[in-house]
Length: 221
Image 1 (cartoon, one colour):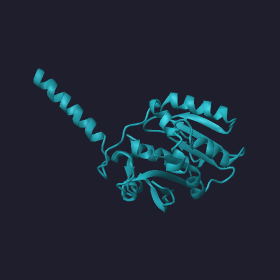
Image 2 (cartoon, rainbow, N blue to C red):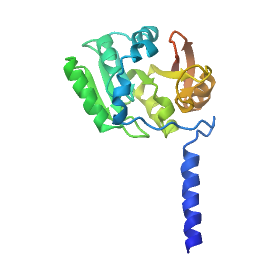
Image 3 (tube, helix red, strand yellow):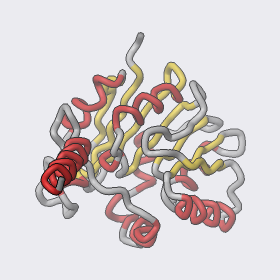
Image 4 (cartoon, one colour):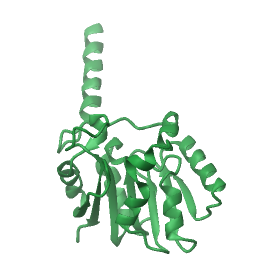
C-alpha cells in the first residue's frame, strides 16, 4: 500500500513537471507574479529599463481603438493605453489576481481614467469579448502562462480579423540582460510557440534597451 502511494505521488509529480514545460520548445514556464510583486511593477527604474512610451509609440495605438492589457498587474501600461485610445476608445485591464485588479482600479481612480474595464481572467482564458479587440498587449507576461495554447486560442478569438497581438519579452539572446532565464525568450521561441496557434509574425521591433517587441497577426482561415 505504501509503495503504491509513493508511485502515485511520483506520477503526479511527473505530470506536474510535464505540464510546466512547453511541448514545442521545451521552455519551462515561469511562475506568475502575485500581488507581493506589485511594487516591482511600478518601480521608478522601469521607465529607463523598459521605456514604455517608446514601446507604445513603436506599436502604434490608434485613437478610438479597443485594446486589452493582459496580465495588467497594477496598470503600469493600462493607463498609458487608456490615454492613447482616448475617451472614444476602451481598454480591458486583465489579470488573474483579484488583488492586482484592486490596485489597478485604484490607479485608474487616482488618474481619473474612466475608459478602463477591469477583467478577472483565468489561467486558460482571459475572459475577453469575442472579435472585439484591435490589439492585445502582453508585457513581460506570456512566458508566465501555464496554459499558453489555451490562452492564445482565446486571445485569437477576441481579436478582430485585422487585430494584432503584441508581446514584449526580455531578450534571451542577450546574456547581459539582467533577468532570470525563465523570464526571457528568444524571437525563435516565441515564433515557434505562437505560429501553431493561428498567428503569424508580422514584425520584430528592436527599439528597447532590453526587450523584443513582437507583433503578430491572425493567420487567414
